[in-house]
Image (cartoon, rainbow, N blue to C red; front, side, top):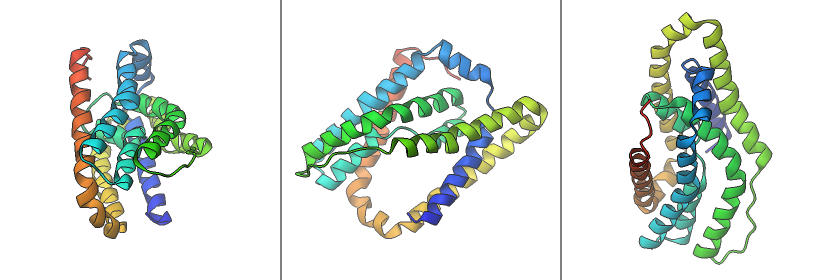
Length: 227
């Protein structure tokens, strides 16, 4: 992905996150803190279930070392702004999603090196020390997620009628921007994307389907309330 594409992606996500903030209030986040069961379950899935499922998929499909390590990296990474946007479009618990993104992003500074060190030892002969640029991750979290969402919430608090009128147009615009950004990213790496689709497509799909199913079943098991 080129630097230009990365900048466009970041700006698009900032706009989308601001739009999400227009539908949030402080009581939404207070509820998440007051009843933290959902966030603990989400974090357990993120840091225990996801890497474990990623490992089982890599082993059972006998993936190449590169693809196996890639699947483990995908499993180790926290949900980001895109997960917040999909939650928003699906009318899910947006405050919970944003809270999970913030907490998981901070914790992943420690967990990603651990998971990737394990993946390298398990699937390759390389002996590298993995580290994460904590400052960059925290800055990205603030610039792309927390500040835009906070700005949107501030606008909602000052101009509630405007925010209510903008909610539907913002949701439609977010969906359009998301589709355009994904299409643009795929186009910018089309040669690599096509080359690796056959090898990495199935395990990536299995990782998504399996973890989403597990998350849904755990939500039912622990009787989490619907938004």
